[in-house]
Image (cartoon, rainbow, N blue to C red; front, side):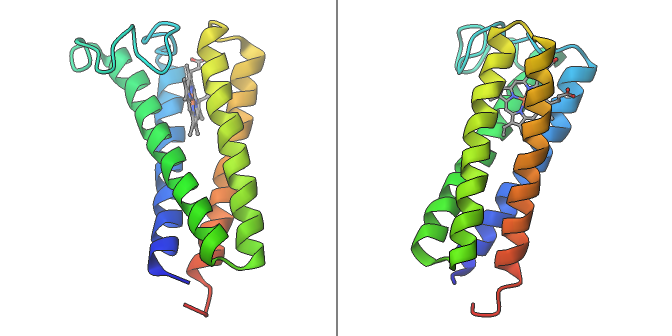
Length: 147
Ligand code: HEM
């Protein structure tokens, strides 16, 4: 099993945790609609002009950006696992990628619904589940002796 697979799984977990931390600040500082209801753009921009002058925009933007990077690394880990992983890695990677797809769609639903409380609660629940799955996968790969 390649070092690249282990590295991508660990990076994915760290990025996922960082997304959750930023997400809690978005919630605490009421910045959930700082990018409006646009997605994937922020107030109609790929890079909003007030990115560094408005704290709320910066927080919501970073939440989406780091979440996007985490998703990318989860997809890379999934592809690597399918190619080089053991049976258990394939299963864990499939569960993780499924959870992250639902999580990103829920993120979109959170803003499109103007922060509906039930959807926000689901978004938090799936964030936790995604991190658990990604962390177990990273641990399983990191402690695999056959590398
Ligand atoms: C890897 C993907 C993501 C993870 C792990 C994640 C995680 C979180 C977490 C933990 C919170 C705090 C929730 C709370 O305290 O109740 C949050 C808030 C939020 N997230 Fe995400 N998120 C992700 C992607 C997204 C995406 C793609 C969007 C938008 C398109 C988004 C939009 C939001 C919004 C608007 C809030 C604030 C909700 C509020 O103020 O009530 N998230 N996210």
